[in-house]
Structure formats: C-alpha cells, structure tokens
Image (cartoon, rainbow, N blue to C red; front, side):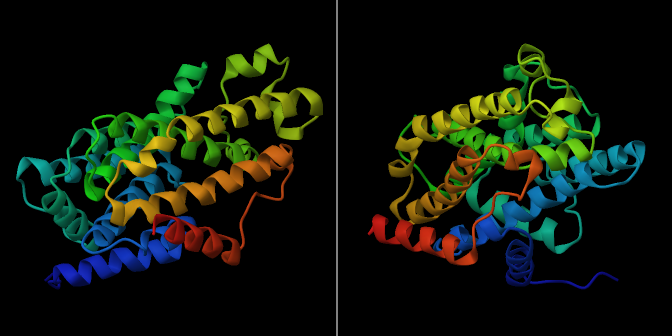
Length: 288
C-alpha cells in the first residue's frame, strides 16, 4: 500500500531535490515568495526526472520505454486520468492545478529529451536553436506563468532567455558531451571551420576551435541582451530570482569568453558558492 503524503510533504521533497541537484538554481529559487517558490521546486523536479531518463546509461530501447511512460504519466495531469504515485508527480500535479500551467511546454520538453535519446544530429544553427527551445525555453514559458507577467511580449522574451541559458550549458560542457558521443555544435559550423568532431574533442586546431566556440559565445550573449527587458515584465516579487539565475549563468558565459578552450580542455567553468550568493544578494538589492 502506498503511503499517502500531504501536498506539503510532496513539495518539501521537491525542494530537497533542487537543493541537492541544482545549486545554480537553488539560491535564486529560494528568494521566491510562496506558493510560487514551491511551484518552481515542483517544476524542477519534473524536469530533472525527464532529463535523467535521456541522460541515463540505460539501453536506448529501455530508456525510450521509460520516456514513453513518463510522457503518458504527464498527459494524465491534463487529461484527468489517475495521477501517478510518487512525490514528484504529486508536486507537479499541484503546480499544474495551482498555476493553470499549459500542456504544450511539457510536451515540447519531452520531445527535446527524445532528441537526445535518438541521438539526432544537429546539422544547422536552426537545429541547435530549436533544440534549445525544446529543452530550455519551455521551462522559461512555464516559469513566467508561475511568476506572473503583464506584457504580451514576455513569453517570446522567455523563449530567448531560455536559449541563452541552454547555450551556456552546452558551451561549458562541450568536452563532456563529446566524451558521451554527443555534439551539440552544428555539423555545418564544424565543416565551415575545417574541423572534425575529433579535432574539436582534442582541440588540435586551437585557432579554429576557439573561433567556433567564440562565435556561439557571442550568440548566447546576444540572447541575454535581447531578452533583458523580461526582467522588468514579470511580477516584482519574482524579479530577484530571474535576475540571480540569469546573473549566475551569464557569469559562467563570461568565464568561457575569457578562455574558450576550457569548454573542452577544462577546468569546467564554475562559480564558487560565495560567488553565487553574491550575485543573488545583488539581484535582491537591485530589485528593491
């Protein structure tokens, strides 16, 4: 017999998961007022489960079955079916109802995970941006739904901010992804630069590798700049969180810009706990 939980217990489980698995986000999310804070914790827990399926070492057919079940369970949140058991499902079901979250971003996020499972080739810049939209901009769309916004332009800016954040993630993990057999930088870009995947993995042609990486660093920075008006479009009580989360990732991008080779050769671009806390405190002070 499954032990029943109160909504508060399920949401506390989601909070603990964020603290354990998402250091870059936790410091920003904890500044949110309730119930928005719990809504974001639940959303992260759902995203983490989806991401873990695609990133697991399970054989592809088995992982695909897991993702199909995950997609079916997610659909029940919107179709009125029997809710799946478990604290994550209890938490996200609460968030969907509490904030009237739309279904499409959830479906698009799952499609992004299928991209990884099926190891689809990213050939063009458009392919990469679409992948970023699926796995990150969808999160931005759901975040602003929870936070609240008044400007009709906010959803499109949330899409751009999501692309900026995901490009930062991709650029700081180029080497790690290549070791796992994944290359998110477009194959057409590599060909244009005269590089093979092996050249990029070993950084054997440093000038070409650096220029390719720097081109995408510039694109990521442009998305941070173009989405900047979003910071003042969401509810005032949520602005410190958005600014802190953005500030942390933008700082990581600047570290990559200072030495693009670390995206492959390491060390991985990181911020200290003190650095993250400092950004969060500045965001809170700026909002006031």
